[in-house]
Every structure is written in C-alpha cells, then in structure tokens.
Image (cartoon, rainbow, N blue to C red; front, side, top):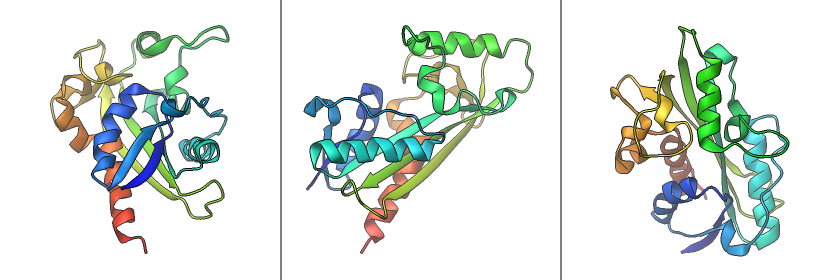
Length: 199
C-alpha cells in the first residue's frame, strides 16, 4: 500500500473518494489527520487550484498527495459559480455554506429558461512537491438546475442538480450509484487508468 494524503478538508469529498482510492492500492490519510491548513485557492482554473492543493499537501506532509478541485458550471451564468462554487454566497465576514450557496443559485436563475449545467472535477496526483509530471484527470457530469431542492443524499449543489437521463436529482441517488456516474467518478476512473499504465 502506498501512503497518500488526500488534500481536502471537505468531509463529503473524503467519504466519496476514500474507498475508491483504497482500491488503487493507496492507504489514504485526509489532510485533517495532519492538522495542516487548507491551501490558498487563488488559481483561475480548476486545474490550477488542484495543483496548488496537491503541492501544498506534499510539502507539509512529505507524502504523495491527491487533490481535487470541482464545481458547478451553469451556462446561463456564463460558467458561474465555477471555481467559486464552494464559496458562492460567501462574504468577507463568513462562508455561507451549502444552504446559502443553493439559495443564491436559485435566486440568480429566477425566470431563466435555459438551466443546463454540469459538474466539473479535476483530480491531481503528485508524488512530491517538485513533481514535473503530475497526473491530471478531468470528469464532467451534465445536467440541469431544478427550481427546488430535492433529495437528502450528497452535499453541495446535489439537491438542485437534476440528471435527465436518470430522471432524478443527484441528492436522490444512492451513494453507490453516484460513485459510478458522477464527475468525480469519471475523473477517478481516468486516474485509475493512468496509475495502472504508469511505468
């Protein structure tokens, strides 16, 4: 087993990724186990932020790291909330959390007909802080933003994200099903492919 730090403090992501990553032969330790601070996510893309988080975790733990940066892109909002998904409703004083983010998104889309959207996920695997060739994987999950929150599973925007091909919201999916079809599942599948074929 390879000891790897998972560079996130988001417990939803930890729970969603930990079991799958163990299947790759990784002994996963969330960065919270090391009491290290979150990286400053000041990149302009999902790729930049994932790289920053992985490098930060590598430097502070001296272990290989896996980091993801993910978010929701809404076409009618020109890709927003995008890289700011987790702090969409934040102010300089406080982070509003999932409920505030969802409330703001519904407000922004009042009266809007085109509600097409997608979840994006970028996952980075970095062996050490100076790794010149980190593995970078990406997955997308197409859907629509509904007009009300439905479902109790998942986290973030899951209660608002409707998947036409499954005729349900992400928050209505059983976790085992979500692990097969989500944006993060697709990025993880790509990571598995690269790890299996890396020389």
